[in-house]
Length: 207
Length: 124
Image 1 (tube, each protein chain N blue to C red):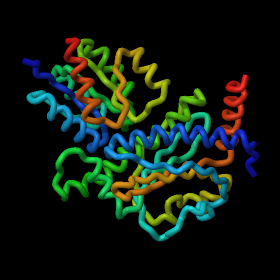
Image 2 (image 1 turned 180 degrees about the horizontal axis):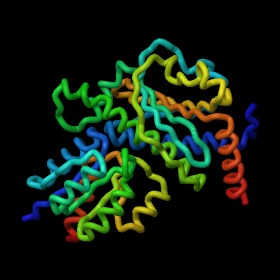
Image 3 (image 1 turned 90 degrees about the vertical axis):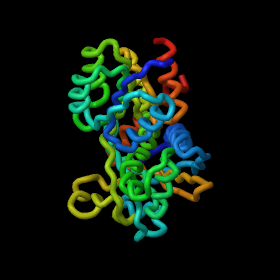
Image 4 (image 1 turned 45 degrees about the vertical axis):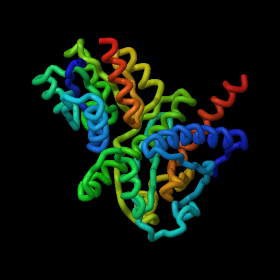
């Protein structure tokens, strides 16, 4: 399916590490507390439901999706359990806001968090590989975990190559017990392109 | 006695505008802070008020922050313009620098926003 050498896989993991490190620093600045990150794991899967990420498929999550394109393209998603998202918004606001406006602001605030975190990830990768990546406007949705990537079911799935690269990064705000994860979803063509860029990057670096 | 300044915040995120406004108003009492959620509104506000500062997001519907910054740079050469963006790519930073626009990485924080305006004011 996808033929990555250990070194290529390691390099991609390292690139993501640099990106999420930057993202964690941004999130930590926003919430004024340390943010713990797990080491990203890379999975190649045919269906989202195979990702092994979904402990509770019916859990409602708040998700910010940002599509990106450039040398390779795909979607980046930032996902929080819904029940924690208001708490996160309260954490993010450094100014007093009445509770009713807090709910109004929830979506706005989470989109902005998504925008900052996903850009930090993608931007760091783009900077290392030296290829600009364009990010579309962030989109917000609330849905059950199993419906996060609806395009893989039904007719769209027949058109798209049935391979997803899932880069799974878990983060945790220990003080507030808020956790979430970041997913990158790319199709086969994009994965091959990224693999090629990574191969060249390794070659240049080792010269 | 510091001068009273006027600032136009251009960002499609209400949340981002709310934070930056709070940081400016908390540290620079008396400054006028206006908001626009996209480039068209920003340009029509700029035609009515002579702003000292523009703080512009990059990723917006319609014109992006660099396109808007380029237009504003030409129209208002005396104004200070900063791109406040989550897009930290070197490509963007280089483009912005070449246009004479300052670069501020999101997230906006009290310290970052205050330090930026203080530095500008001390040069003025």
